[in-house]
Length: 126
Image (cartoon, rainbow, N blue to C red; front, side, top):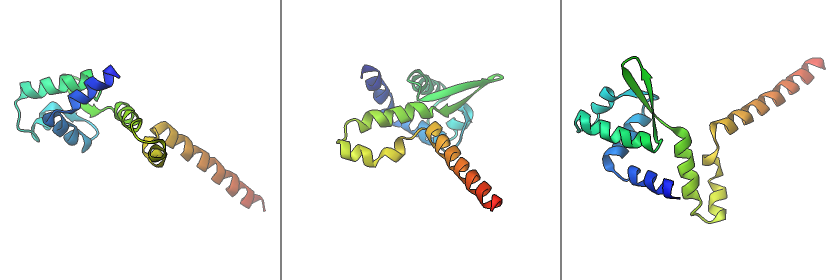
């Protein structure tokens, strides 16, 4: 729980929430592009990005001399699960859809595709 407390403290800053809002509009962004949307200096942005990275809320991928930033979806999903733990069981079951990981969604799609192929194969053999 201590780790989550630090994560929520990092998320409690309005500037960092603005950064996440900006990042949510694109898959990956350079710091220079993020700065265009904020009213902070480059060193201030670097400080906030460091904190977001340290809590694994944001990922940084080095490409040449630049770093491309993106939101870490796994961390966000884990935070949702943590918060959902505070809800009564009935409420958490009704929100189950939002907690599915991309892997689970992919597995569902593959299963559906297999069923469709079977059905198509049966219809062709008739």
